[in-house]
Structures are given as C-alpha cells and as structure tokens.
Length: 598
Image (cartoon, rainbow, N blue to C red):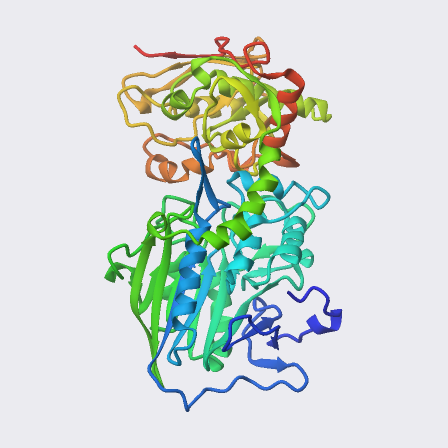
C-alpha cells in the first residue's frame, strides 16, 4: 500500500496518527483513507493530515436514512476452489459474483453503499499454498490476495495464520497481489511489514464515513525468527484508537481475528475474544464486530440476541468458504445501527462465470503442473487409507505415523540436528493416501499446513510423564473419538499402553528408548523433534479434563528451538529420496506401540 513512502512519512509522534488518502477506489462514489502509525503506545489524541488534505466532512445534505451493506467472510485458508475427484468446484467465484451483484444493484442508488471484508486467515491450508513457496526466493503469488483484489475487496484483517510463512513472505504477497489494506491495530515491532499494514482505515461511501479497526489474535502464532513483532492487548488498543476514529466516522466497524470468546473451543483464544472486547467497550461504542479465527457460523437464522453483547452485534461466517455473511447498517443523521444480518450458503450462490474464467482459471493452470509432480508410489496398506486415518489414527500404532515420525528424524539428522526421536499428532495429518502413484497434490492433502519442525529438550523423567499422559489421550474402543493430541513416536521409543478400567487409570509401561529401559535414563537429556502445532488441536479437550486426568505436563513449556523448516517440505524430500510411502521406506507397523485392549 505505502511501501515506497520515505521514512519520515512514518515518523509520527506519540499520541498521533497520520490520516492519508490513497488511490481512489475503482468503485464510483468511494474514497479510501488509511490511519498510519502505532496505536499500541497509548491514547491517540490527534490526526496528522497530508499537505493540502482536509478531513472528510459529515454530509449534512445526504438524504437519510442511508443503508450500508457489508459482505464478509473469514478463515478461507486458501479454499478458493474445492478440489474433488470429479474436478474443481468454484468457491470464491460464487462469493465474488454475489459481491459484484450487490455493487451493480446499488451503484446508482444514492442511499445504498457496499463494502466487502475478510476477517483474516486467507492462506495456509489448501493446495494454492504451493504457489506461496516457503521464502522470498520461492514465492510466486498469493492466490487469495490476487483474487480478492480482482473482486474489489475493501480490506482484510491480519489473521494469525497469515504469518505462518513469516513476515517477509507476507510482505511479498502484499506488495505483489494486494490492492486493499491489511488491518491490525494491535501489532507492533514488525519492520518487514512497515507500509503494508495499518491500524485502521476510513472509507467514505457516497458521503457516509465508515471507520474500520483491525485486530489480530496472538494465539497459535508461528515463530517469527527474523522479526521482533509482537501483539498488544486488543482491548487497550481499541480504547486508544476508538475516540479518534469515531471523531471522523459515521459508522465504526471492528474487523476482528481475535476469535468469538475466551470460552471458544474450536481454536485457542488468548487475552480476549470478540465477546470480551464488546463487554469492555462503552455501550454500543461500535456498530458491529465482524469476527474470525474460531470458525463460528453465527446468526444463521438472523441476528441472535446471544450475539449482541453490550449493545454490539457480533457476526462471523464459518470457515473455508462455507458461508458469505451480509450485514446491513442503517445510518441516520445522528445514529447508525445494524438492521439485518444474514449468512448465505456459498454453495447456493451462482458462479460468476466471467470471474471464474478470467481470474480463477489462470491460477488453476499455474497450480496443476505443480500438484501433478510425481513423488513416488503409495503401497496398498490399509493403515494409509483415508478411512483408517479418520477413524483409527489415535487408537493404536499407525504405519503412516511411523513413516512420518521416522522421516522427521532422518531429515533432522541430515540437517545436522542431534535428534534422539520425533513425535507427531493429528494436528499435522489431514487425510490418508490411496494406493498407486503419489503426487505433490496428494501429499498436500495429507499435510496442508505450514507447521515447522521444532526441537524440544526434555529429560527422561519428563518423557516418562509425557508417555503416561499420552496413554490417557489414546482413543478407547468404548468412547467417542475426539482430538486429544495423542502422540506417535519414531522407532527409538517403544512402549505399551495399559488402558485400565477407565481413562484415568491408563498408563504407559515397558518404556524403552534406543533399547534401554527409560527408568535407567530418567536424568538423561533428550532432543525431540515435533511439529510446531503439536497438541494445538487438543486445547479444548485438555481444558475440560486437565484436573480429572491429572494432565500436569505442558509440552509448550519445554525449551525449544524452531528449525524454520516446514514439516511438509521435509517429508516431500524424504519421499522423493525413498521412492514413496511403502513398507520399505518406513510405512509399516513394527510393534513400537502396543495397546492392551483387555
């Protein structure tokens, strides 16, 4: 957005922000302004204007009431198209078509205006990530940002997963593919993104001034080795920023990637969620909080009273392109309020065929040869199948998990890391593999995320405790299977699980590491390789059973070093080197784990 501005442009004194107008929107009757500066240091008391610029005035001559229509989505994670065995099924082309139809319908209407937003997590989780690369040199394009720009999106909030591949790569994506502002008010200390993100934006839509404040959760954030970025309390930041934004706005919106509430179980929420934010602000201080992160599909039957906190409506549109949200805000001369909320099932929206042909298909042509690259052969082994992965992955020893854990050990040692063993859980594995030729696209389906390899240091005593607690995480035959974070280990670690009469009684016995009983190695220090999001999917289960199951061990507190190598890339290299996923390459059970079912 403002990458080429000189350093003095960003030299803004404490207590102030710059309000700068950027290029006029392609949509007639819309002006765009950015709030530039750091809103985290303290209350913002004044605005600095560019030379010759004046504040956009309140239009007293407007024919009120005015209706602002907002289209929104969140947590698309690059699912711009659904890939099925029968071909590619459009997703974002349906959203883009609906947004275009709204704009065309109201383009000439003096009392209607349209804005479109994403609440973040716009990549990481789909095969389009192959075009992102893994660093600046391998970056090709950000498919989501490119399509959002083509669809005329007005702004995106920064999501935690948008930083999964690092601030430098995100900067590449913003420079090349984003024609909209990226908003986050509670981020500070990120020089790589200077000029690429902003605390807030101001849109003047046919004379109505709409202030939009962005927020980002610090939860589940990938390590940022080359950046000093950090996130500040979002409630305090909004309190710093809100008075000055309200001063120049008729409508104020919070575009949030905090998550619904601290009680949410679908993703970790840290510090505050949207409900806590709304409760902490003055009554009805903003018109709406448009949320994300926790993948909630809120208000499917219209705005629920449960989702109005302290006079502030909270909306969210699910995940992965399931829904496109729509919010109507009716604006009077001295007031503004949400008057309608809808969720549109994306699958029921018509495809914008021109957008699909002109914008999406060129990306599919770029990705198809990448995904079709052959890696090797997949053995006809039941343990590798999608059905077994979905139903039995955490119930017993797994040939697929053995393969992945052993591969991590080999790849770490080839890189010079003195790893003793590796551990993985279901957070790294999304699917199984059909037998036959294995392509890069097939492996992306197994590992769609940008987890990195971390090296954790622990003692034999801590490993023993970890294994005892792991026995309480295993899926039992007489219980519903949930994501409990059950760990699979590489070949060096062998043990048996005695289930006992209940989950509380389960324990690990006959534990050996490299053939020697662990009870003789309790004081030894080990290095364990594991993915960076290990146990992340089990957070909600852990919160409900931590006391009853005595889950005292917290793997997140172990000393660790991030290698900055992607788990997926290391597995791809291993598969290429070993010719596929077969018994010969390690995809087999070898008795390293036994579960006593009686």
